[in-house]
Image (cartoon, rainbow, N blue to C red):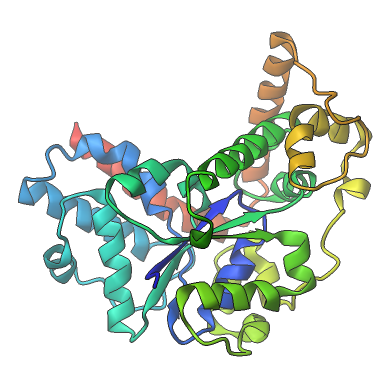
Length: 335
């Protein structure tokens, strides 16, 4: 049976909701993600040869530090660097990440861990290279609602064009990757169906990872993990509320007609492939935007991203700065 569950897809698609629900099971360790792999793969060049013990231990130390200042603290045992080092059978980033999670499972008497870092969808080749075979959960949601959610969040793109390009790329990549994976190794979770009846999907996941289904997930919003997550930042506050069963189709009222048009022109074919209805264009009516239009969209996207940072509560900024300071330090001392 699987020891790990890996989420793939695009954020703002219900992944924290599902993570916190799974975390209610006594066998599952479901921490909030510090995005270790996506963060550290570009930084590996600063560590030199990982077969050098000093370099490898420095990598372990920095990963542990990043986890320890995650905006949402991990509810696990303190990260014992030496024990994690001794557990590693290979001197790779992925191996460190796996062993940190397995260490936490063993220390807390759990058997399965899950990673909600959905950008890992771009790392599946590396997983295959090292023989890492988790159960994949592909979460997807109407991209126009995803875009609306990102427009209000601290992270991500902000202009509708950039949001559409990102969402489409993520879904197309997920769909291509799933074609390479045996059907028994993934579960597709459509957000709109999930919020209507989450038990169907929870039972399927339990069956795939070999744990007994228990009616524990629906009280997720009362859990300590939900409280920690909500305290980690404004963008996660909904996890302390029951499932919002009508939380879909909001883009029809909150996005402008022009925004819906642009999104559908960019990603309409992917929306249709995933079973969503187009509201402005007909299937196949995609559009190629001019370089001048794209430059204008990019400039506005940059402006909006800078603007939203100034609207954040100071405590949210500080929590994220702790991680960014570690990354800056790694780059500085490497030189």
